[in-house]
Amino acid sequence: MADFHQNGNITTLHNLRSRRPEQLTQEISVYAETRKITLILPCLYSELSGPALSDILDELSKVTYLHRIIIGLDQADEQQYRHARAFFERLPQEHVVIWNNSPRMLELEARLEGFELAPQEPGKGKNVWSCIGYLLACADSAVMAIHDCDIVSYDREMLDRLVYPVVNPTFPYQMAKGFYPRTGDGKLNGRVTRLLVSPLLIALKKVIGDRDYIDYLRSFRYPLSGEFAIRTPTLPDLRIPSDWGLEIGVLSEAWRNLAPKSVCQVEIADNYDHKHQTLSKEDANKGLSRMSTDICKAIFRKLAAEGTVFTANTFRTLKATYYRSALDLLEGYYADAKMNGMELDRHAEERSIELFAENIIRAGQIFLENPHETPFIPTWNRVHAADAEFLQRLSEAVALDLEEFT
Image (cartoon, rainbow, N blue to C red; front, top):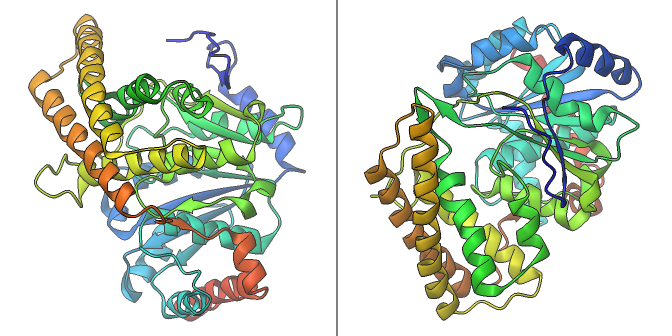
Protein backbone atom coordinates (compact mmCIF):
# COMPACT_ATOMS: atom_id res chain seq x y z
CA MET A 1 0.00 0.00 0.00
CA ALA A 2 1.61 3.24 -1.15
CA ASP A 3 1.96 6.18 1.20
CA PHE A 4 4.19 9.23 1.49
CA HIS A 5 4.94 9.29 5.24
CA GLN A 6 8.35 10.63 6.30
CA ASN A 7 9.66 9.85 9.80
CA GLY A 8 11.92 12.91 10.02
CA ASN A 9 15.16 11.01 10.75
CA ILE A 10 16.00 9.42 7.41
CA THR A 11 14.34 9.84 4.04
CA THR A 12 11.83 7.20 2.98
CA LEU A 13 11.41 6.72 -0.76
CA HIS A 14 8.06 5.12 -1.55
CA ASN A 15 6.61 3.35 -4.52
CA LEU A 16 3.60 5.53 -5.31
CA ARG A 17 2.80 3.50 -8.46
CA SER A 18 2.97 6.66 -10.55
CA ARG A 19 5.85 5.69 -12.84
CA ARG A 20 6.28 2.82 -15.26
CA PRO A 21 9.14 0.49 -14.22
CA GLU A 22 10.79 0.72 -17.65
CA GLN A 23 11.18 4.49 -17.21
CA LEU A 24 13.15 3.96 -14.01
CA THR A 25 15.30 1.32 -15.72
CA GLN A 26 16.07 3.64 -18.62
CA GLU A 27 17.12 6.45 -16.29
CA ILE A 28 19.41 4.11 -14.34
CA SER A 29 20.96 2.94 -17.63
CA VAL A 30 21.87 6.53 -18.49
CA TYR A 31 23.49 7.10 -15.08
CA ALA A 32 25.29 3.75 -15.26
CA GLU A 33 27.21 4.84 -18.35
CA THR A 34 29.40 7.01 -16.11
CA ARG A 35 28.61 5.50 -12.68
CA LYS A 36 29.21 1.77 -12.98
CA ILE A 37 27.14 -0.55 -10.81
CA THR A 38 28.34 -3.86 -9.34
CA LEU A 39 26.00 -6.39 -7.73
CA ILE A 40 27.25 -8.74 -5.00
CA LEU A 41 25.51 -12.07 -4.42
CA PRO A 42 26.66 -13.91 -1.26
CA CYS A 43 25.76 -17.52 -1.91
CA LEU A 44 25.91 -20.96 -0.31
CA TYR A 45 26.46 -23.84 -2.69
CA SER A 46 23.28 -25.45 -1.37
CA GLU A 47 21.29 -22.48 -2.70
CA LEU A 48 22.04 -23.54 -6.28
CA SER A 49 19.50 -26.33 -5.86
CA GLY A 50 17.05 -24.19 -3.88
CA PRO A 51 13.73 -22.81 -5.13
CA ALA A 52 14.89 -19.22 -5.61
CA LEU A 53 18.30 -18.78 -7.24
CA SER A 54 17.47 -20.02 -10.73
CA ASP A 55 14.57 -17.58 -10.99
CA ILE A 56 16.77 -14.77 -9.63
CA LEU A 57 19.28 -15.39 -12.42
CA ASP A 58 16.50 -15.37 -15.01
CA GLU A 59 15.46 -11.93 -13.76
CA LEU A 60 19.02 -10.61 -13.54
CA SER A 61 19.68 -11.75 -17.10
CA LYS A 62 17.28 -9.00 -18.21
CA VAL A 63 19.23 -6.24 -16.42
CA THR A 64 21.37 -4.41 -18.93
CA TYR A 65 22.91 -1.68 -16.77
CA LEU A 66 25.02 -3.85 -14.44
CA HIS A 67 28.75 -3.54 -14.97
CA ARG A 68 29.63 -6.71 -13.06
CA ILE A 69 28.14 -9.35 -10.81
CA ILE A 70 30.33 -10.80 -8.05
CA ILE A 71 29.17 -14.12 -6.62
CA GLY A 72 30.74 -15.14 -3.32
CA LEU A 73 30.50 -18.95 -3.10
CA ASP A 74 30.67 -20.60 0.34
CA GLN A 75 30.74 -24.23 1.45
CA ALA A 76 31.84 -25.69 -1.88
CA ASP A 77 34.54 -28.19 -2.89
CA GLU A 78 36.33 -28.18 -6.26
CA GLN A 79 33.66 -30.14 -8.11
CA GLN A 80 30.93 -27.96 -6.67
CA TYR A 81 32.85 -24.83 -7.65
CA ARG A 82 33.02 -26.08 -11.23
CA HIS A 83 29.30 -26.75 -11.14
CA ALA A 84 28.64 -23.26 -9.77
CA ARG A 85 30.69 -21.73 -12.59
CA ALA A 86 28.51 -23.54 -15.11
CA PHE A 87 25.34 -22.63 -13.21
CA PHE A 88 26.06 -18.90 -13.37
CA GLU A 89 27.16 -18.97 -17.02
CA ARG A 90 23.62 -18.02 -18.07
CA LEU A 91 24.30 -14.47 -16.84
CA PRO A 92 25.04 -12.26 -19.87
CA GLN A 93 26.83 -9.64 -17.76
CA GLU A 94 30.47 -9.82 -16.81
CA HIS A 95 30.50 -11.96 -13.68
CA VAL A 96 32.92 -13.77 -11.43
CA VAL A 97 32.47 -16.60 -8.94
CA ILE A 98 34.78 -16.26 -5.94
CA TRP A 99 35.47 -19.70 -4.46
CA ASN A 100 35.94 -18.74 -0.82
CA ASN A 101 37.12 -22.25 0.13
CA SER A 102 39.78 -22.55 -2.56
CA PRO A 103 43.39 -23.32 -1.52
CA ARG A 104 44.47 -19.91 -2.77
CA MET A 105 41.81 -18.09 -0.78
CA LEU A 106 42.68 -20.11 2.33
CA GLU A 107 46.32 -19.20 1.80
CA LEU A 108 45.38 -15.52 1.70
CA GLU A 109 43.42 -15.97 4.90
CA ALA A 110 46.51 -17.48 6.53
CA ARG A 111 48.48 -14.47 5.34
CA LEU A 112 46.03 -12.19 7.13
CA GLU A 113 46.32 -14.29 10.26
CA GLY A 114 49.98 -13.30 10.35
CA PHE A 115 48.81 -9.70 10.76
CA GLU A 116 46.03 -10.75 13.18
CA LEU A 117 43.51 -9.41 10.68
CA ALA A 118 41.82 -12.59 9.45
CA PRO A 119 38.03 -12.97 9.84
CA GLN A 120 37.35 -15.04 12.94
CA GLU A 121 34.45 -17.12 11.67
CA PRO A 122 32.93 -18.16 8.34
CA GLY A 123 29.52 -16.95 7.27
CA LYS A 124 27.70 -14.32 5.27
CA GLY A 125 29.69 -11.46 6.80
CA LYS A 126 33.02 -12.92 5.71
CA ASN A 127 31.60 -13.74 2.29
CA VAL A 128 30.39 -10.16 1.75
CA TRP A 129 33.70 -8.79 3.05
CA SER A 130 35.70 -10.86 0.56
CA CYS A 131 33.46 -9.76 -2.31
CA ILE A 132 33.88 -6.11 -1.31
CA GLY A 133 37.65 -6.64 -1.31
CA TYR A 134 37.52 -7.96 -4.86
CA LEU A 135 35.32 -5.04 -5.91
CA LEU A 136 37.81 -2.58 -4.42
CA ALA A 137 40.66 -4.37 -6.19
CA CYS A 138 38.83 -3.88 -9.51
CA ALA A 139 38.53 -0.14 -8.73
CA ASP A 140 36.03 0.53 -11.49
CA SER A 141 32.59 0.80 -9.87
CA ALA A 142 30.80 3.76 -8.34
CA VAL A 143 27.91 1.85 -6.75
CA MET A 144 27.67 -1.52 -5.02
CA ALA A 145 24.37 -3.32 -4.47
CA ILE A 146 23.81 -6.51 -2.52
CA HIS A 147 20.93 -8.89 -2.02
CA ASP A 148 20.44 -12.47 -0.87
CA CYS A 149 20.15 -15.54 -3.09
CA ASP A 150 17.08 -17.08 -1.45
CA ILE A 151 14.40 -14.55 -2.47
CA VAL A 152 11.56 -16.64 -3.86
CA SER A 153 9.53 -13.56 -4.84
CA TYR A 154 12.39 -11.86 -6.74
CA ASP A 155 11.72 -9.39 -9.51
CA ARG A 156 14.26 -7.26 -11.37
CA GLU A 157 12.38 -4.12 -10.30
CA MET A 158 13.70 -4.80 -6.77
CA LEU A 159 17.21 -4.07 -8.01
CA ASP A 160 16.10 -1.04 -10.02
CA ARG A 161 14.49 0.57 -7.02
CA LEU A 162 17.37 -0.39 -4.71
CA VAL A 163 20.15 1.21 -6.76
CA TYR A 164 18.31 4.28 -8.06
CA PRO A 165 18.74 6.49 -4.95
CA VAL A 166 22.54 6.06 -4.89
CA VAL A 167 23.25 6.00 -8.62
CA ASN A 168 21.30 9.21 -9.26
CA PRO A 169 24.00 11.92 -9.08
CA THR A 170 21.50 14.60 -8.08
CA PHE A 171 20.55 12.72 -4.90
CA PRO A 172 22.65 13.11 -1.70
CA TYR A 173 22.28 9.48 -0.58
CA GLN A 174 25.39 7.41 0.04
CA MET A 175 23.43 4.35 1.16
CA ALA A 176 19.94 3.02 0.44
CA LYS A 177 18.31 0.29 2.52
CA GLY A 178 15.51 -1.75 0.99
CA PHE A 179 12.21 -2.37 2.77
CA TYR A 180 9.05 -4.32 2.03
CA PRO A 181 6.20 -6.15 3.77
CA ARG A 182 6.99 -9.75 4.78
CA THR A 183 3.94 -11.86 4.04
CA GLY A 184 3.49 -15.25 2.40
CA ASP A 185 1.15 -18.24 2.38
CA GLY A 186 -1.47 -16.12 4.13
CA LYS A 187 0.80 -15.36 7.09
CA LEU A 188 2.74 -12.48 8.60
CA ASN A 189 6.46 -13.28 8.43
CA GLY A 190 9.51 -11.33 9.58
CA ARG A 191 9.42 -12.66 13.14
CA VAL A 192 12.77 -11.29 14.27
CA THR A 193 11.96 -7.76 13.12
CA ARG A 194 8.39 -7.82 14.45
CA LEU A 195 8.91 -9.70 17.70
CA LEU A 196 12.49 -8.80 18.67
CA VAL A 197 13.93 -5.66 17.10
CA SER A 198 10.84 -3.42 17.22
CA PRO A 199 9.86 -4.12 20.86
CA LEU A 200 13.52 -4.19 21.94
CA LEU A 201 14.08 -0.66 20.64
CA ILE A 202 10.90 0.50 22.40
CA ALA A 203 12.09 -1.13 25.62
CA LEU A 204 15.59 0.35 25.33
CA LYS A 205 14.12 3.82 25.03
CA LYS A 206 12.10 3.26 28.20
CA VAL A 207 15.00 1.79 30.17
CA ILE A 208 18.00 3.91 29.14
CA GLY A 209 16.21 6.99 27.84
CA ASP A 210 16.28 8.82 24.52
CA ARG A 211 19.19 8.06 22.21
CA ASP A 212 19.60 9.38 18.69
CA TYR A 213 20.89 5.95 17.64
CA ILE A 214 17.69 4.26 18.85
CA ASP A 215 15.55 6.78 16.97
CA TYR A 216 17.70 6.14 13.90
CA LEU A 217 17.18 2.36 14.01
CA ARG A 218 13.46 2.78 14.68
CA SER A 219 13.21 4.87 11.52
CA PHE A 220 13.84 1.81 9.34
CA ARG A 221 10.73 -0.10 8.39
CA TYR A 222 12.67 -3.32 7.93
CA PRO A 223 16.10 -2.96 9.55
CA LEU A 224 17.02 -6.62 9.00
CA SER A 225 16.58 -6.59 5.23
CA GLY A 226 19.60 -7.99 3.38
CA GLU A 227 19.20 -5.59 0.48
CA PHE A 228 21.17 -2.36 0.36
CA ALA A 229 23.11 -0.23 -2.10
CA ILE A 230 26.04 1.99 -1.26
CA ARG A 231 28.44 4.29 -3.07
CA THR A 232 31.83 2.61 -3.24
CA PRO A 233 34.00 5.42 -1.75
CA THR A 234 32.49 4.55 1.65
CA LEU A 235 33.41 0.84 1.42
CA PRO A 236 37.11 0.89 2.48
CA ASP A 237 36.14 2.16 5.94
CA LEU A 238 33.10 -0.11 6.37
CA ARG A 239 33.36 -2.62 9.23
CA ILE A 240 31.55 -5.84 8.37
CA PRO A 241 30.25 -7.93 11.30
CA SER A 242 31.12 -11.61 11.06
CA ASP A 243 28.04 -12.87 12.91
CA TRP A 244 24.26 -12.63 12.45
CA GLY A 245 24.42 -8.94 13.32
CA LEU A 246 25.44 -8.11 9.73
CA GLU A 247 22.40 -6.03 8.78
CA ILE A 248 22.25 -4.10 12.08
CA GLY A 249 26.03 -3.73 11.95
CA VAL A 250 25.95 -2.15 8.49
CA LEU A 251 23.24 0.29 9.62
CA SER A 252 25.38 1.14 12.64
CA GLU A 253 28.37 1.77 10.37
CA ALA A 254 26.25 4.10 8.26
CA TRP A 255 25.29 5.90 11.49
CA ARG A 256 28.97 6.19 12.41
CA ASN A 257 30.35 7.21 9.03
CA LEU A 258 27.53 9.07 7.29
CA ALA A 259 25.18 11.91 8.12
CA PRO A 260 21.52 10.87 8.46
CA LYS A 261 20.67 12.91 5.36
CA SER A 262 23.02 10.64 3.40
CA VAL A 263 21.04 7.51 4.29
CA CYS A 264 17.62 6.56 2.94
CA GLN A 265 15.29 3.60 2.84
CA VAL A 266 13.50 2.64 -0.33
CA GLU A 267 10.42 0.51 -0.95
CA ILE A 268 11.57 -2.22 -3.34
CA ALA A 269 8.70 -4.73 -3.39
CA ASP A 270 5.02 -5.18 -2.67
CA ASN A 271 5.84 -8.49 -1.01
CA TYR A 272 9.00 -10.37 -0.12
CA ASP A 273 9.50 -14.00 0.78
CA HIS A 274 12.66 -16.00 1.31
CA LYS A 275 14.01 -18.98 3.22
CA HIS A 276 12.65 -19.10 6.76
CA GLN A 277 15.00 -19.94 9.63
CA THR A 278 13.88 -22.33 12.35
CA LEU A 279 13.43 -20.96 15.85
CA SER A 280 15.96 -23.49 17.24
CA LYS A 281 14.88 -23.15 20.84
CA GLU A 282 16.85 -26.27 21.77
CA ASP A 283 20.18 -24.97 20.37
CA ALA A 284 21.22 -21.40 21.11
CA ASN A 285 23.92 -21.55 18.41
CA LYS A 286 21.56 -22.10 15.50
CA GLY A 287 18.58 -20.54 13.72
CA LEU A 288 16.68 -17.57 15.04
CA SER A 289 17.99 -18.19 18.54
CA ARG A 290 21.56 -17.49 17.44
CA MET A 291 20.41 -14.65 15.20
CA SER A 292 18.49 -12.91 18.00
CA THR A 293 21.44 -13.12 20.39
CA ASP A 294 23.88 -11.67 17.85
CA ILE A 295 21.48 -8.85 16.95
CA CYS A 296 21.07 -7.92 20.60
CA LYS A 297 24.83 -7.93 21.13
CA ALA A 298 25.32 -5.69 18.09
CA ILE A 299 22.85 -3.13 19.44
CA PHE A 300 24.30 -3.25 22.97
CA ARG A 301 27.85 -2.80 21.67
CA LYS A 302 26.88 0.22 19.60
CA LEU A 303 25.02 1.86 22.48
CA ALA A 304 28.00 1.24 24.76
CA ALA A 305 30.26 2.88 22.18
CA GLU A 306 27.90 5.87 22.31
CA GLY A 307 28.41 6.13 26.09
CA THR A 308 25.60 4.00 27.54
CA VAL A 309 26.52 2.10 30.72
CA PHE A 310 25.05 -1.40 31.00
CA THR A 311 24.86 -3.53 34.14
CA ALA A 312 23.28 -6.88 34.96
CA ASN A 313 20.36 -4.99 36.51
CA THR A 314 19.92 -3.02 33.28
CA PHE A 315 19.51 -6.22 31.30
CA ARG A 316 17.08 -7.72 33.79
CA THR A 317 14.93 -4.59 33.59
CA LEU A 318 15.28 -4.54 29.83
CA LYS A 319 14.07 -8.14 29.57
CA ALA A 320 10.91 -7.39 31.55
CA THR A 321 10.21 -4.20 29.64
CA TYR A 322 10.85 -5.91 26.31
CA TYR A 323 8.48 -8.76 27.18
CA ARG A 324 5.61 -6.40 27.94
CA SER A 325 6.32 -4.29 24.83
CA ALA A 326 6.44 -7.38 22.61
CA LEU A 327 3.12 -8.69 23.91
CA ASP A 328 1.54 -5.29 23.33
CA LEU A 329 2.79 -5.22 19.75
CA LEU A 330 1.56 -8.77 19.25
CA GLU A 331 -1.99 -7.55 19.84
CA GLY A 332 -1.56 -5.14 16.96
CA TYR A 333 -0.04 -7.77 14.68
CA TYR A 334 -2.91 -10.14 15.45
CA ALA A 335 -5.53 -7.53 14.61
CA ASP A 336 -3.68 -6.54 11.44
CA ALA A 337 -3.43 -10.15 10.28
CA LYS A 338 -7.06 -10.87 11.13
CA MET A 339 -8.33 -7.82 9.27
CA ASN A 340 -6.38 -8.89 6.17
CA GLY A 341 -7.58 -12.48 6.28
CA MET A 342 -4.19 -13.86 7.38
CA GLU A 343 -3.22 -16.44 9.96
CA LEU A 344 -1.23 -15.64 13.06
CA ASP A 345 -0.44 -18.37 15.57
CA ARG A 346 -0.43 -16.48 18.86
CA HIS A 347 0.97 -19.45 20.77
CA ALA A 348 3.93 -19.74 18.39
CA GLU A 349 4.43 -15.97 18.45
CA GLU A 350 4.51 -15.89 22.26
CA ARG A 351 6.96 -18.82 22.30
CA SER A 352 9.23 -16.74 20.07
CA ILE A 353 8.89 -13.74 22.37
CA GLU A 354 9.79 -15.88 25.39
CA LEU A 355 12.90 -17.17 23.62
CA PHE A 356 13.94 -13.68 22.53
CA ALA A 357 13.47 -12.39 26.08
CA GLU A 358 15.82 -15.08 27.38
CA ASN A 359 18.33 -14.24 24.67
CA ILE A 360 18.34 -10.59 25.69
CA ILE A 361 19.69 -11.74 29.06
CA ARG A 362 22.08 -14.16 27.34
CA ALA A 363 23.39 -11.45 25.03
CA GLY A 364 23.76 -9.11 27.99
CA GLN A 365 25.77 -11.67 29.93
CA ILE A 366 28.06 -12.28 26.96
CA PHE A 367 28.49 -8.54 26.57
CA LEU A 368 29.37 -8.01 30.25
CA GLU A 369 31.72 -10.99 30.38
CA ASN A 370 33.50 -10.07 27.13
CA PRO A 371 33.56 -6.27 27.01
CA HIS A 372 36.47 -6.28 24.55
CA GLU A 373 34.82 -8.65 22.07
CA THR A 374 35.11 -7.22 18.54
CA PRO A 375 33.26 -9.42 16.07
CA PHE A 376 33.88 -6.96 13.26
CA ILE A 377 36.16 -7.95 10.41
CA PRO A 378 38.91 -5.32 9.95
CA THR A 379 38.15 -2.61 7.41
CA TRP A 380 39.81 -2.85 4.02
CA ASN A 381 41.64 0.40 4.81
CA ARG A 382 43.30 -1.35 7.74
CA VAL A 383 44.14 -4.42 5.67
CA HIS A 384 45.70 -2.19 3.04
CA ALA A 385 47.72 -0.36 5.70
CA ALA A 386 49.10 -3.69 6.96
CA ASP A 387 49.64 -5.29 3.54
CA ALA A 388 49.52 -2.92 0.59
CA GLU A 389 49.68 -5.83 -1.88
CA PHE A 390 46.81 -7.85 -0.42
CA LEU A 391 44.01 -6.59 -2.69
CA GLN A 392 46.13 -7.30 -5.75
CA ARG A 393 46.87 -10.79 -4.43
CA LEU A 394 43.14 -11.34 -3.85
CA SER A 395 42.32 -10.34 -7.41
CA GLU A 396 45.06 -12.60 -8.75
CA ALA A 397 43.90 -15.56 -6.65
CA VAL A 398 40.36 -15.25 -8.01
CA ALA A 399 41.68 -15.00 -11.58
CA LEU A 400 43.94 -18.06 -11.15
CA ASP A 401 41.07 -20.10 -9.69
CA LEU A 402 38.94 -19.17 -12.69
CA GLU A 403 41.72 -20.15 -15.09
CA GLU A 404 42.74 -23.41 -13.39
CA PHE A 405 39.29 -24.83 -12.74
CA THR A 406 37.56 -23.84 -15.99
